[in-house]
Length: 173
Length: 105
Image 1 (cartoon, rainbow over the protein chains, first blue to last red):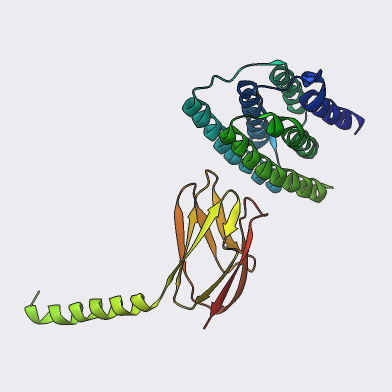
Image 2 (image 1 turned 135 degrees about the vertical axis):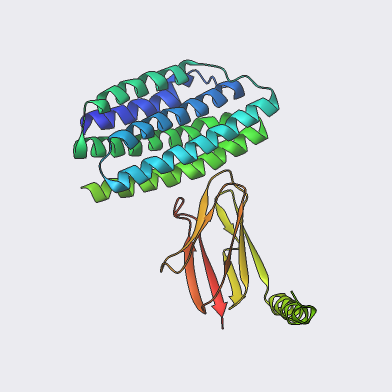
């Protein structure tokens, strides 16, 4: 529990605080990169869950994640193409990817009900962190109206995922 | 086919067309994870047409299991209402999307 919680706090502070300290707001190309990276991370986690999860509700949840995050990311790619923006790699994206790789490796060692629980717990924490970053940093910092609107749609859908993950987590107990 | 048989078929087509002309098609949109309008009234025999304007797949699923219409991204789906009553429905993938369909006899 302590590890999970601290991971969530680390993720939140990385997204919303430390990485953008000194009042430096992320630019639109950076925001696009962060949002896209965050989506890819959840898709990778869901694909791992689809091959490892045993619980039916956990599998359904993972399928929902793949479907929704792929749809959001496709829209994000279409938008950056349309706006002629090249997403820019940055420290937040790098830290997110590194943490996600560690998490995938950690979950890879688990099986059965232990995997299901750990995956869903991480999904709750991860969506909380991403939603918080969207609300407090990414949406307010976005300049382009279409990017802002896509992030707002993303927030709405990810809040739904957070609720869904919490519901599945409570059923597993 | 004998010419005499064409007439009844033509008549049936005309009658069929006139019956369906009385039934309305009610359009509901799903956009930005919202069902609009959220409250709709219809009559038995009407067609409900949901138009999914999102890039996400949605469903129109009755809470009591009476219907479950799949709505792929940017596609429409229809349902001919056969039963009177009040139907609460939602999207199975995004349960925050909720609406009510009221069907009069």
